[in-house]
Length: 398
Image 1 (spheres, rainbow, N blue to C red):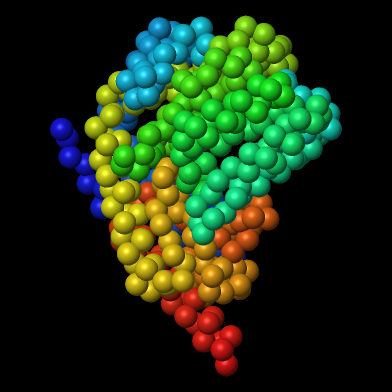
Image 2 (image 1 turned 120 degrees about the vertical axis):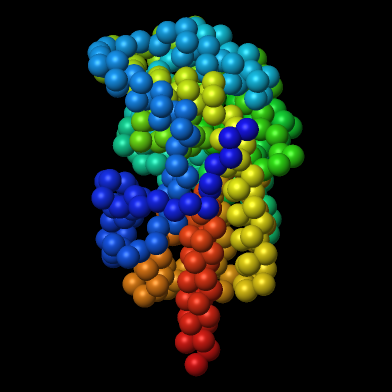
């Protein structure tokens, strides 16, 4: 197996990287010296096999209109069959230019103006932005936080799903940012509630490949035959290729397929698939499992390092590694006001991390940090956080 150097750092500035060059997307106080540990974007070079496949296709000299063929569809089907024993019908796979646009298409197709769409905060903030942007109503089914371990409030979910105006649940599975990987029993209860209330489920499973050792992700389609489910998957987070945002939208039900096509094909004429996006997907799914295996081991070690570092330096946080994703969800609010910490980190210590507040009110006090980076970045970021917190606590005690 080819060994990859995940400790190596790369200069990404000057490439219009959102993470490095456009930090003002999150905070306009960031400078060229700011260390970015925000955004779900890895600091690991893309696998050689993907880069080689892209170069070969470019050397071919033609990048005309393309559509999904058997090579691409088989690569998708084989990956999810081998990883999760999920048997996907090729006819169920629909293209979208990324998962977020797909969520917008689904909201528009399955709900009407002012209908409610249920989400489970603290959750990926574009969900609420898309719901509001479509003229729908955000319905919060807040997760229950038990000392940093999150559970679903099924009683509240059932109550909100019973309202006929609340037509759709957007399920984040695994959950971003809290890192839960829902158990089979939890998913079965979600499906039971939604089936009883005839609520659509859109399951965003973009982080499904990024789980910790001995943690199993269950694609929701593998535990139920409930027809009103749409699943979104993508190689983007798994293989660090989010800049070429191809997504596979899995729709088994014929009526839902028709609704999807009416929204995407008839309204926006989304018919063709970018050829380079398919090329990278085929290479990733067929040849890069070894790359992912090493990346997951490195991320596991980074989480273990972070857990130990915070236990030694900020024990009140009681931090534990998440079950899934490569995003740490940390309660620095246990020590200081989160707004004060955010300000001093960016203005004095040149560190950019994400305030949990943007993920919904239940995220107040928490911060989201990407650990998919060389250890030197993570260690330096944590050092700056500890120094900043100690400075703030000393100031507040005077």
